[in-house]
Length: 155
Image (tube, rainbow, N blue to C red):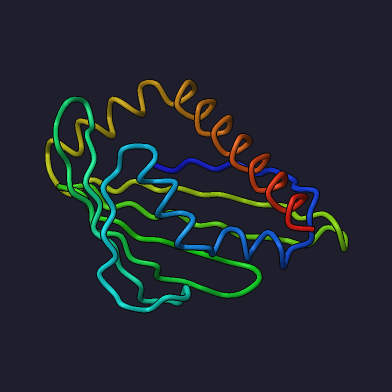
């Protein structure tokens, strides 16, 4: 199952990529949302191969996830892979410069179930695909606005 969204950001591609690849800020943002994040690799700067363990609550259950930064191509692409229980996920962000001060961000998330319980979860998402897709698009739009505001402040 796959979700896609595109948003235009009023900022240069280099600034947008720098904000998206600020792993320390992303870790702090996850912690503020109640996700326990622990970096496994020792690198400070972002690079392919970085790993994290994350703990979070989902539908009242404690879940653990392993996350890998599998693609890091400045200033155009970031991709993460994650495994949690029987569910494998990929999260890709592709950036395209529309003009010197405008960037298009394309976000794609794919879910691949490996167990029966994960298949049931994905099947329930498929039944509500329209609603889930709208929520995903709204979240991507909110995130794009946050990136745009942060880029404006850093100018």
